Length: 505
Image 1 (cartoon, rainbow, N blue to C red):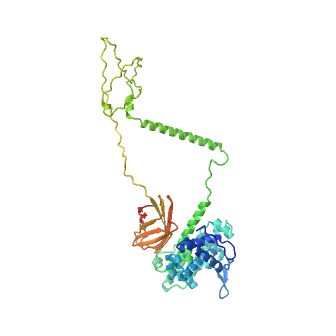
Image 2 (cartoon, rainbow, N blue to C red; image 1 turned 90 degrees about the vertical axis):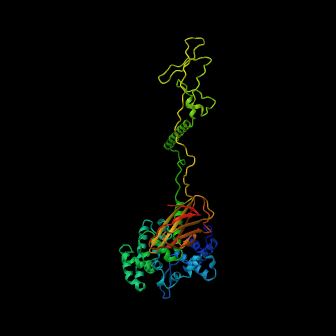
Image 3 (tube, helix red, strand yellow; image 1 turned 120 degrees about the horizontal axis):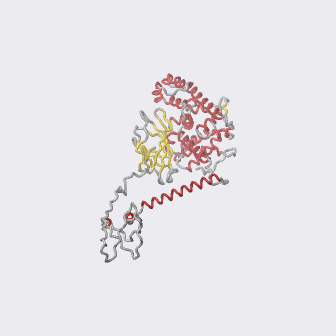
């Protein structure tokens, strides 16, 4: 999809910085890359018209008061959602994902297009911020761009962008707190709205024990609690989910992975020590290392040669302690226990070596006809003691390594709901894949991206999407989902890839 031509807006200026974000969200909303390209092109034109063709951020309302628009990127993303709604209403909904088609007819979708006072809290708070703070907050929190890149894009001082981002976060939370207090909450929310806002203002956790039960039942206060939380990642999730609605958390996960890929591609490769001018110290060190390595290899070969010599070579030593040539005829195992025959006299006798303390000279045969000749001493039969060696097992029951490994990442969790990501590393190439597991605590998956969901009781099946079905050997596949939980939220059990069990780490 990244190879699709970048369209140009009504003013004729290229929209490269926004096209990637629009196409990424359009891909979540459609069933194929071709439909995603068409949806992204129409949404980009629609969003450009809404901004007045020149990226203006204010428009005139009915009372001639300036109306603040969303920053450019989230405005174009909401244009994708509005274009998808127009497709559904115009009979072109077959190109959209089934989950989005169901969501477009739900009450949650009506909140994003209904009266302003009933719209999601994060959407209202972002729209109410000054344009520069809203732009900075979205690019840093949702698009996951590095702060130096954000500063360069917005024309900010790189040394002060961190402080500016902290100020924008504080303004956003303060706006959420005031909008939650000033809104028309239902009667049961009245006693809880102010304690909730007070807990956020004092920096204490926004879910104390006396509010947890209420937050599990009240969607409005739970939404406010998500916006007011200060733990890492909570603000990003609240912004993406509140502004985009359907697929907001999936889009957030995609942008985070895209930012990591860009950082990995931009990181310089380590310098090759062989490149550049010669370094005599480095070359000398390399020579010494190579010499030590060659010595170690030679010693290993000698030790291996000695260990592979046959056992019969030990009997080739004569009585004087010197080694003689081994007989050409190999001794059988039955012959090794028999007495060894005396050596035959040589045709030209050679002087015997001087006896030593560690060897006994072999008897010489006496000349023929000599009376004093004594019969040759019969040496006692030598029996070779069998060496006791540990029997070598040729086939051991060693378990084969798993063909896949799974990393389960609980991205964020809130009362009665959570978001998670599953990353599977496969040791073999895949033309298609199916990941199955079981939830031990009855969790229910409500939405899944980058895979097709099927759930039967506690058993979950995630099958490949058309664009990520092929995975090379050693590659990874990743998908995410939103689910509900109650009581406990244990991790997946019995994870398998195409029917083969995977190791979970």
